Every structure is written in C-alpha cells, then in structure tokens.
Image (cartoon, rainbow, N blue to C red; front, side, top):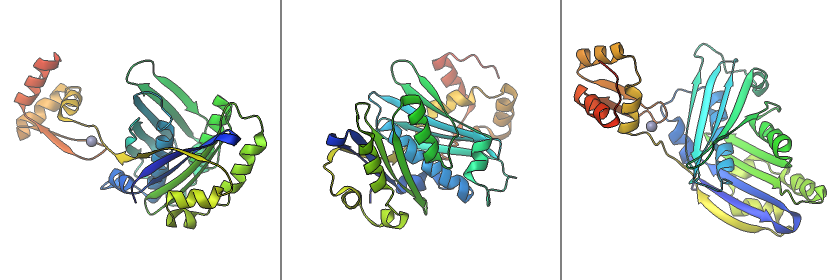
Length: 284
Ligand SMILES: [Zn+2]
C-alpha cells in the first residue's frame, strides 16, 4: 500500500478529518540510522503528525516539528512541504537508556515547537505545550488552546509503520455533540484492525452511518532536499583550519547529510569555485 493521506469532511456535522498511513517513507527515513525503538516510534509519529498539519497548508512552503528534552532527546526535527514530502532526524544521547522511558518523562523536560515557513511571506512559530500522555494528545491540546478547535488524533505505530486518524471541528460547528459522536466512533478503532485494512474500508467501518465527502487524496513520501550546493554552503561555515586540515590530509573534504546519509566530497577547486559564485569570503 502506498504512503497516503486522505482528507474528508462531514459536511452536515461541521467536522473535517484526515487519515494517514506511512510505511515505506518511514523506512527510508530511519534506514541506517541507529535509533532505539522508542526514538524510532516517536520520529515516525512526528512524521505522521507533521504531514497531517502540512496537508492543511494553503500555500507553498514547509512546516516543521521540533522536539527536545533533557531526558536524552537532544533534538528531533521533521520537515514537510506542501507536497507532503518529508524528512526527519533525531539526535539523542548515546548513554541514555530508552528501553523503559515513557513519553511523560520526555514531556516533563521537553519542548515542542511548530514552525511554518511559507516560500513567500512571514514565518510563524508556535510552542506546543507538552501537555498530554502522547504526542497525539499534545497536538490535541495545542489545537484546543491556540485555535479553540476541538481536535482528536489517534495514532498507531507498529513495525516502522504509522496510521493516524484526525478529526477536527470546524470553527462554525454549533453543536459539540456532533464532534463527540464522531469521536466516540473513532475511539472504537483498534490498532490491529487499522493495520489490516485500507483507508476506504477503515472509514467505512468507523463512519458508515455518517454522510461524508472525500476531499482529496495525496501521496506522502520521504524526500531529502540536500544538494551539492547546500552542502558546499554548509562546508564553508566550518572552521577554516578544519577545512585546511582535511584538504591537506585527504585532498578533499567529505561530508554526510545527517538526514538521508548521502555523502558528498569536495576538492579545494570545488570550494573555491563555490566561493567565487556565492561570494563567500571564507579564508583557508
Ligand atoms: Zn539528505
């Protein structure tokens, strides 16, 4: 099954929703990264959440979710564009034991930030209070507080796959019973069932008595937008002595993209050429 996101709306009830399923793209994101299981699940859940948020962007741009915690999670970052292409990365403390850690421990000492960066226009940044027993609950709380929108997000993670269903009341919703009714139906969804059936069957089972319209369906994919040019920019920010050492020792400087682990190597000529194009004044 493809990695896909569906948007739908219960027109009569003034509630909108999304369902997402990620598998191959998660695998690509975590491939060759040595993440403990806890970290892997957190990253995969964040990828799903970020795609759900990105799907509602009404402009070209990017949305990112950042999380850090004093409990060994130095930083987690997922970036998704409006075409639902994403990449993600975690830096964690090697010496920390994640085998028995709970989300609450991460949340207690943690901070989560959502940043929206339109290709044109002003960026927006919002702090997501770590108020909940899971990432999903934190997002529900965030929408309730910042947008006054009733939101319910159910996420299941298994074998490097994630399935998520999100319901959100539209601002014009008059009767909160509408939302509560759909929420009640959503709560009947079990992980095992969710992983076995496709989106259409899932929606049919959950909401078969409701009238809902499908709005759109979008593929979600892993895509790292690193390039030689961007890596050259990054290299030129390195310490000049470090660059000189590397060039004299190896005849090149090698760098690896932290997200997709692609490696790039540059000679002195490459660096000089890039400097002359960009006007970067690094001396070495
Ligand atoms: Zn990359």
